[in-house]
Image (cartoon, rainbow, N blue to C red; front, side, top):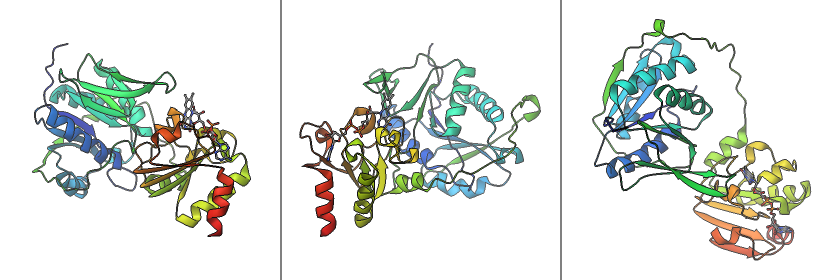
Length: 331
Ligand SMILES: Cc1cc2nc3c(=O)[nH]c(=O)nc-3n(C[C@H](O)[C@H](O)[C@H](O)COP(=O)(O)OP(=O)(O)OC[C@H]3O[C@@H](n4cnc5c(N)ncnc54)[C@H](O)[C@@H]3O)c2cc1C
């Protein structure tokens, strides 16, 4: 399909229930700015759904982070996410504004929204990407794991907009202000024309402290099958507490009941990038490393000197975790 879409990159700005712009938006924004430069300096725009008047609270954040245009929809009904309203209005907006790329955070909400938008627009969607780039033809090259994480595939989209979802924590937020004279465009939402078959009956918050802790942890001490049993994880916890670290785990350790699902790091778990990641008794399977290889400094403790984790470790300690941790705790 020829590219008539030339209004730059559109990002869905999800709001949290606590009324913040979800961090994943700023992560995508930072990456989108880089892609926009490669496309010759196109605009990076956002779409957001708010209750009346609420956009004022977010204007400064959008300006400071250098968003060119913010398309906002206002209605009391947008207090809660609505699959049908949001997706149909975004489809309408995309048809009118013709972005060449649309990015959505792969949060629970984004995972519901993105396929509906791409389906209605008859365009492709690369889900759960771990990398984005612009190829020599100026197309979005979206990379994601495939074949159970054994291979990384770079996928191109034939239609426009080229769509991708990206998990939180894959890209970093640019802490620098990147001020822009953001244009705020109020969009009219003719909700009467949209059939809304989904009703939110109740909202229950599941409090998972570990998830938030892992997201912001500077030190993560992660355990794998090599820790063998609960005693191994108790030792890991004492070790982590001593250095102010938060516990992470491999999927195998979670499956063994040694750590909660919320502590799982990797392809089907969380993506983290702490300052220090200490991998204890972890072999370094690609499905695990994909979620932690962005850590600033990786330390691996493993009794097998050939364990693949040493290939990505900045510091490698070959030895028995139990002996090393006990010795460390004595000091
Ligand atoms: C579709 C799919 C998705 C997946 N998603 C994930 C995911 O999100 N996250 C994830 O982690 N995995 C995931 N996996 C599983 C992944 O493939 C690996 O099986 C898993 O990461 C291995 O976990 P491990 O390193 O704890 O165990 P192992 O691979 O068994 O490694 C244990 C390591 O401990 C070392 N060891 C043993 N004893 C000691 C000791 N006393 N001291 C020090 N070291 C010791 C061993 O040398 C070994 O290297 C997924 C798999 C599939 C197919």
